[in-house]
Image (cartoon, rainbow, N blue to C red; front, side):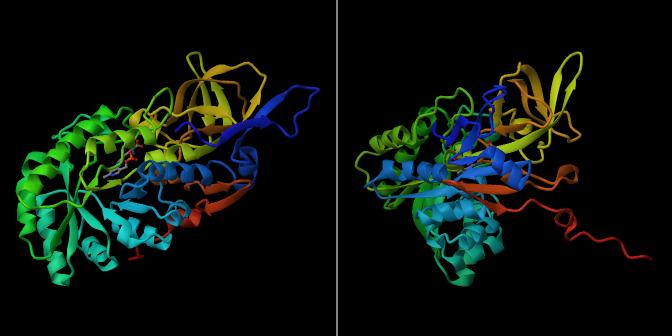
Length: 430
Ligand code: LLP
């Protein structure tokens, strides 16, 4: 997971006489400086090659074992990203009908879609049944009854899998930990047998799987393997009462390198899962998001001005928390570096945006050799970046660009002021 397609190459215009510029950053074979010139800043840039390579790592590791890798659309739902994955035969994990429509528009196959989430609404269940999705990952007894009702009204059977909560600590940030019994997700694993037996009696439900997702950015396989052991015990109990599960979905959650983490590779993780599975004939499913797209993307931003105070130096940039909220929301670390490196002295900066919040920062206490006008790259921004952006402070969302070898394509235009006020109206004059 270290390959991110970023490389430093000698600056084309660098003058040997002044030694001012050393080298500049490329994503695949495109200079990020050229992207900024063509599309402006702030801007998200993704590498097609990295997305493909990360997806193929799952496919290669699963090889001859029956499997379906359902990319978690929430991590990055740009149509071009979904299309790149659809072309490789990916399945998709969705949490809303909006995500289903995106998958279909991008050429994805409904029969490879799983629908997760604690609050599926009637119209969403209807649309998914009409589209013919692979399976609903059911998160409560109430939802099970609702799906049965909708399926019976439409007279279309619904494939279901229970998302069980195995009560395992994922050792990750509390906001992205989902497999503890106090979390809102899934059904407690000790009630699952009973619920499966009730589902088996329902006229329009077809039990196909069991599912769990314990959290995100896991950097160790042991919580996954603990959860798997509990889920496999359930699978065996179900078989003993005549309920035969076809697939086991282990969710997403594999961590990536943002800083000094040492997550297992996809191959290491999957080989441990396969080993623990033994000779059970279960199709293996995964719902990776971050491990497919995080290190395939960067966020480009320009230094507007340097502000020095007696206590701190601030690099005020044109990107902000509305564009990339992970640092503000989770105190997440993402690497920041100048696109063009210079032989000038470095200083320590908080890299902050123009939004009116103290929490509006992209990085704190970073050693950078920079000046006003310089271009910065925020690494590992392909997952939970653009998708979590907002228009806070009436800031238009940035464009998204995809690089493919030496080409760069605009895959979402920068928003305009008209986009910001679309749908708003004044009160009538009384
Ligand atoms: N499946 C389910 C049911 C999920 O809830 C999630 C993520 C995934 C799969 C994909 O997990 P991944 O492979 O990406 O770890 N905004 C946070 C992450 C939230 C994750 C939510 N669920 C962040 O920026 O760190």
